Image (tube, rainbow, N blue to C red; front, side, top):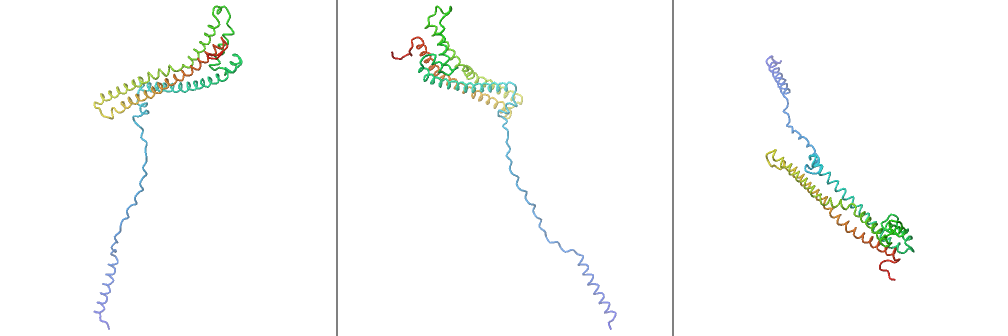
Length: 274
């Protein structure tokens, strides 16, 4: 039989085993080392190209300029527009005149009579106008006012007046080009002086000649100078070019009028053989 003492030892050992297992079961197991995941890198933002407005350009000049600067800009814009308009219109007129001169020499002198030659010309052209005035002077050499004027003088006066009217018409607008070419640089110079005045004023107010204080007014002055030259140079070149073309056109008109005068009075052209 098992003694009481042995039974007590067995119970104590069992209790110790149970207590040990309970204590170890309650202790949490050591946590495994965890590696924190690095946050995912955000995608690089696309570079944005921003257009920066030029603070010293023409747009800034218009916004920041006073009424004097704006008046100068508008004046030069009007002068430039008038220059190019006159140059284009006069070029078209001169080209038409050259073509009409060729047509007159090809058709008028082949007609059987002067009235037939007048009808062969384009109505309203300078050559038609000269011929019509010459024929009218020849047919209406009568009346009390012209009784003491011979036929040759009367026809000559009528043809010369027609030629002078055509020349005056061809020269129309050239005075505008000459005026623009001679005054545009000074208008731009006035804008330049006004911009320098603003630069000096900015220096006096701020007490320092830093670049940010004088860059705007000085840029305004340089822009005014450039615009004045850009307006004047085309006007001067266009004036000289159109005057040379006018001279060539008037030579054709005068040659036609001289031949018409000779035909009306003598029945033959200048230089024709008998």
